[in-house]
Image 1 (cartoon, one colour):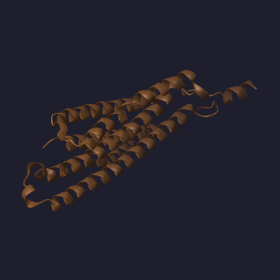
Image 2: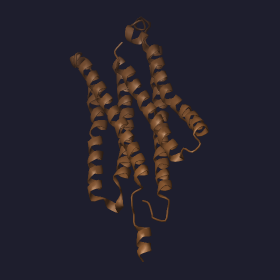
Image 3: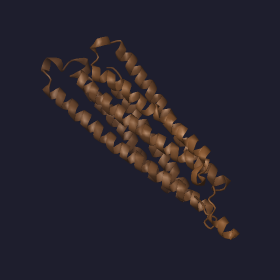
Image 4: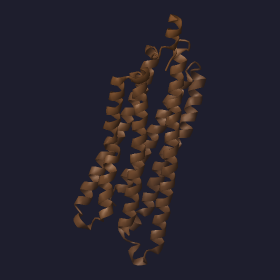
Length: 132
Length: 131
């Protein structure tokens, strides 16, 4: 909502800032849940391997579990690395182009972290469902 | 009086700002729909892969493969329809740009929820299947 007394461009900038911050919150929550899920899966798999009779440990499905864990952690890193990368990008863009508005920076960085979070989740899904 | 009326009239932001918000909302929609299409295709691949295994596949895994898919997939058309409906009714002078950006945010949020749930159920059911 823009009133005639207010500056419309500033109001639009505030709107973009709010949406960008909402994207940061969504991406951060997704990363926290993703991190928790990966760690739970890894610990459960390790418990499974510990309890496994020694004759089954050489089976292909179980031998591939460490590789699966490292792939899952790599996918999580893709989601996690987006946050510092976006902050550094904001800092650099503000230094290079000082006049750029906060709303555009918040919206652009929010889009970036959300896209990276989704890419990490999709990658993890591919890793988790690929047969060994 | 006329000045007061003009001051309280709700209106959309001017061209450049409105197009920026609209572009942002459309980008959100593109990310959400793209992720849903990839999610859908992956689940189809998994379902086809396990269909070859036949009855040996545990029932909870089959159930989750087919229930995780519509979680993301069916909500997006509903959000799009709600956006269109609100845009036609135009309550409180909300413009298309704001509606598209808010609905894009909801679509993206729901996609992330669907992906997390799908990944969670698939990962845990695969562990159980290994057991």
